[in-house]
Length: 462
Image (cartoon, rainbow, N blue to C red):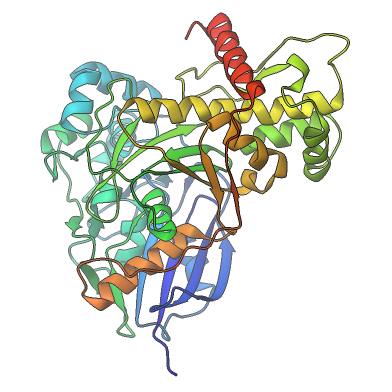
């Protein structure tokens, strides 16, 4: 039986990945990957080269691009970047973010835009360009995001670029509640309003490739992951990667003046409130380095430690922290005694500190009225058995672990299948579960959460 093949593209900070997928079943037929240069700014051509190096896409009926959010791609009238693209993790625009927050006030940003400016967001990067390189800013004709730029290239560089609501919602100059760009915000940050991509509906097509494949709207990476996982209300994703993310689908729009919960849009026409933590899987790698063991050995040590780490409490703000907003914080270990200072307890404290940091973010999401009946645990850190086993107790919620997969690229593929079908809803693909963990109400978990909160307040005052 012939099958319709579609492609999902994930252009992340580190690499471009391409999945070829069966449009009807969601079965992954092949996977390829190519790396990106390291750093927080890059010539967008490197993304195109990484995609092109994986072969042509002439065999697919449709494709879609999901990519890292917030990156600034500023082009002149010939379509040439005036500056390397500034990525989400480029923090040089911190002064501009502060000035923008103060100009309108956090309450207004949260109410009118949906997010409060931090250096990740595109609007702050445009402000940085205007302030530090006015001669380059004067040349800017249009501004895109990474997924917009790749979609534009795949479509043959049309006169008008396209984007989607999920990615536009992370710029800082797109109003989620109003569903439109805010020229006044652009003028405030950049001095004028350059051309911007047209915002497509979730299942709308952006164009076709030179071989005739339909190009779907594309989306931001977190929206892609949500679509790839097939999230339903009541499910919250906790992703333990280089950074941690906590996000969930929501019909309600979130307004958080603290800036902790970003009121992003998703790729289906609804909302995707999200929190991020700076410290996640690297907490485990740092602990393994300190104990002079590999990650598997760290996992074994943590599994052998006392459930509550013998009273040790690690606050793993090793690189500062975003949730809570403590950019200059450092890590703290409390409760040290001669009796509990063992490699097993140190490893266990690392796992528990990581989970308590994510639990803090989860509680902030719940405080915004987002239902969290089930946690979907993904990311490299979720491969740890000790993390999996402790997660349900620390979160006090059922935890399901799906098989390891490229869910951002899979979400892009699902969007491509949706656009190709012309249906009103995305196709239903089965999500399998590798393991499920139920909380038992273990007393040690409540004690650990209490110790963590007390130590955080005592050390940082919040």
